[in-house]
Image (cartoon, rainbow, N blue to C red; front, side, top):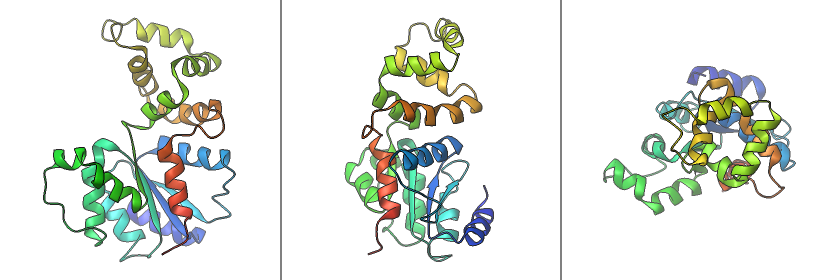
Length: 214
């Protein structure tokens, strides 16, 4: 979605707050987590916007938050994209300009904590990694089996490029090998989790966007 399209959608739906995410898989995971935890995003007028990557976040923040529509914002991002997120929030005056290097920012725990305090939560390393760790390898394999893809996964895992990798890495690559699978699996992996075991980044972004202003 383009920033202008997001603005039009926010106005048309009467959005009261927006969650910015990198892609459709993240959007599906946020919405699935809301359903699991009893949060009605439609009733709360919370719009989840897929930006098509983190590099353009400054444009979305500027159009949807201050100085644009002025809506409360929260966000979910992969930890490697922290530089884009930080700079996007700097542009609207939420942080002073960061003077260190990108690598320093990536390794700076307080910088990530500052972003989380503003409602922007990091997936470590990304959404798939968060879900695999939360669920555990055996349970993820059960989900793959239930979806009728165990034979495909085994074929993938035995390819020369992947056969020496840990199963966690094989699953991570398999879940991201095509866009349809990347979008399809996160809600199903979330459904397989025990209640209360949802990744902290997903729970955190919902708590942030639904928090009372001030």
